[in-house]
Amino acid sequence: MKELIEFIAKSLVDNPDAVRVNELQGERMAIYELRVNSEDLGKVIGKQGRTARAIRTLVSAAATKQNRRAMVEIME
Image (cartoon, rainbow, N blue to C red):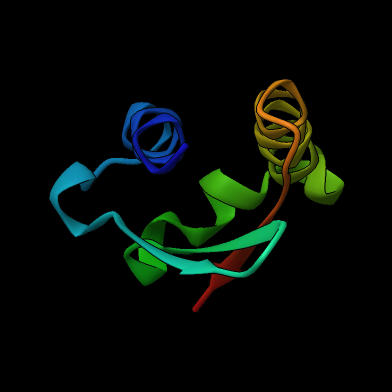
């Protein structure tokens, strides 16, 4: 899951080396903190949050296939 988020984020930003994903595991829920360069934050969020919503939807669908829940937080 972490690799999926990194791949998507690195494809969107101008500075792919600055992309970091931190994984916090719970019993049935995983929280992924996505950090990008401050200049690329708008590209990851998108207009009216559409890109961020799409990333969250993809991660949620992938997690559902593994009978888990996942949440993506975009950090500054």
